Image (cartoon, rainbow over all chains, first blue to last red; front, side, top):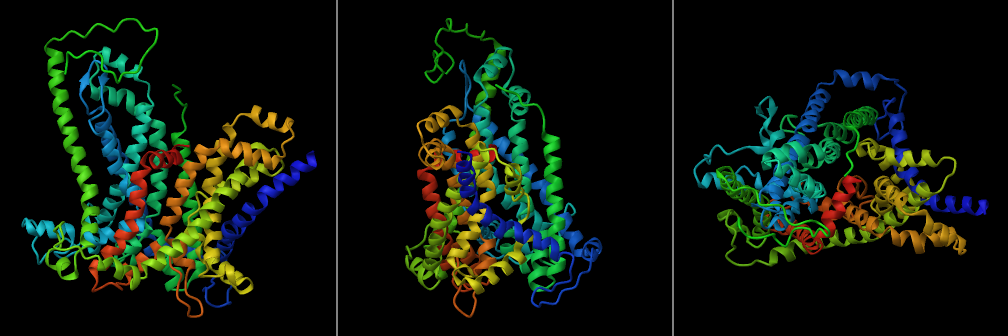
Length: 313
Length: 319
């Protein structure tokens, strides 16, 4: 019998583990190794350079820029997406009329949910290509075209969108425009997530609060929001990963994939440029390892902060 | 609205005493009612604004796909084309190679999603329900893939695939089978993580009963445990279909032309190329048609199965 179990376990694990080792673990391990060399990628010539690549990271102006852009997305993408999603979920679930059964959701909330969820099922690439057309800087672009028609924008001086490196609140405008797309595409999904969490809170709690004379704003801030804490922190972690991965938008939408003039450079774009255009694979791998360490630290930090006793109901 | 008796929507509560007395209807409650109405109106207003912001761009792209080029330039904003130019679609499908992209995507996804689900749930099941040395190690190995950025692996992954291709041409760059294997490997992390927690929750008693009846371990898995895990399989299945359909970085990296043969591009990769390389520079309506064709099938599937997709995807996050 024991023998049978061992054979069964090995049989079930062999293929998945082999695939995973070959296509995921092995490349990562190699990358860590290459990060200690000056390998160019196209020749076989490589020398061991120790931690030189890592030291170089700290004095690299472009990396520093990319790092701060990543931090910008890391803060703003979760913040704005969650705020908007919560607001929409709030309107959807307590925006309806109030009667003796309590406060109800708005009429047609199911339809709203279906619509708001649309961007989530579209691929990031489709969204990027679509918004590229919307953001066009002539009258063919949806936004510039509309604004020119009502006379808010001068035809000779259109909004530059992703070609605009001018800082707004200290951050290049192009990043704000990319942020808008990220929020646009994410809000609906998290709204549905929060909505489901809100509906799983037992009605009795609200009834009690209502009897005590609490308004819908009070019940939202004093009851709903604290009970949603777990869901919100999970959402924050996921949005953090999305924020680190804005590369699809940068790749498709910005001039020279990180421009204009490096105004939208992020870790991933610098890494890919260094590896495949400049042919400095060793250095690019060091960037990747640094990014991985950064991600893991962030995830660990996140888990520490958000870990708390669960409220069971 | 205030004097109607209990709405039927309220949950039935057997054994509950008579309804609570109505709250006194003084000035305060009337004021609240008014505020409620105002708030209801405001809610609808804001929700409608956001709904328009979601739908309008999508509709604009779809409608622009039906205009001819001169109309795209002359009347870029109108939502109603003068005439339905279906030829944009045939042009994008043929000359724009969208047909080929679709076929490639379909070929890859059929294999990769099936294998991801099969191998992922097999691994997750064994890791969740059998004790053996190295169990935790393998589990954490799968888990670690969730936090590592894919870009880090890009260079060695390409090299590995390239070298494999020399020995086994079917697994080399630009091959469907290779992309299937890579997709499966990269989807295993989340699939194992998700199904692991699912298999943990299944009751032991049924498994024990089956073993007493003489079922083998693999029979227990395929005919009892897997069917019981169906809700989880649906969630993770939707997640993987969308995730792999949307994948653009891996194909861009690995489906590169070798020895001069044309690239076997998947849809996301192909669209990027059309857009970034401006291959459609003078063919805006064709680009719109391409985006529309990439967008509509998913949207239609979503609208038909919206309940499953919504709950499937949100379950993927809240696990």
